[in-house]
Length: 401
Image 1 (cartoon, helix red, strand yellow):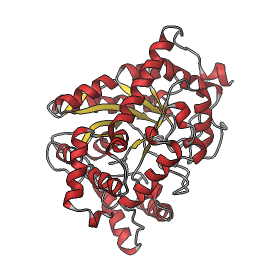
Image 2 (tube, helix red, strand yellow):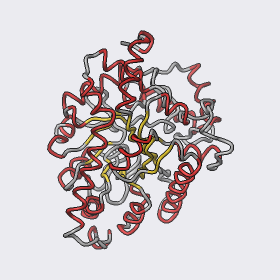
Image 3 (cartoon, one colour):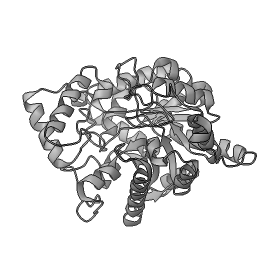
């Protein structure tokens, strides 16, 4: 079923499911979009009102999309390093706190699986945080623990560039996966109850992390490499390890990660942005306008809901229904998938999967149950490890030389 042919009845059935088992979305870059567009000024971008001219996300569209829990990314660009990266990450965390204070009737602070369930019972959207990129901890386990105390519940080990202790999927190999310090980061995340997020990391890093971790991992926004051969996606041998690990792979909607051919177009578009003085990840209105003009003369390959469903079909077949979820990456990309244009689009995906024969129990796992379970499992591991393992104060110099 394409978005164009989804019937009113199919969408009604999808929305009915989402009322009981709402979406847990693993990754949304609204905080960074607000940082770049209006320096966090919620008077200028009041997300209680329609912000579709500037953003993929606002409260009415989150409601329309059936979102029940959102991991807000507190991402900062890798051009920031050291203490500057830490400070910028703290500003991102502070903005999420501003969101929660301004919209308490809609957004509920959440740090645990129990908090997620309580928010759902109250009819509010559970709001969690994930830090995207190990540069945010500045090679410091103390900083890692401080971010966790502030409510950050996952750390993506890298972003687009390597960190000194882990290789990224989109950088030249340097560490060969995880270094000794990188493995210590994973162990300390297990001890404190922080989800190890393997989106963005090299396949070698994924395998090293799975060899090291004592707790389930997540991929907060990655799809299947067998369906679209992009380094940001998950190889089958890694998907096959998730049942033993207990982790969850959350499929993304970014067109260049789900549609073969879109990556080449994106590379040309990125070069066009840089030629005009913009960062290639810029999502400001000015950058979006420049890219739309580029697309008029350079037709863009367009992903569809069916393409995302193809990824989820493959991920279910390879990892199992208990180990998949959704991580849209809205407001972290300019061009979206047709039918998944913003956070209101999730019912279109559920309708497509229903048409493919996905059962209500399977869809409930995809949308809600798997994500809540994996956070609860990580909390249980931390409860055990915290009682028998002291905080690590190891340094990268000590472990990596």
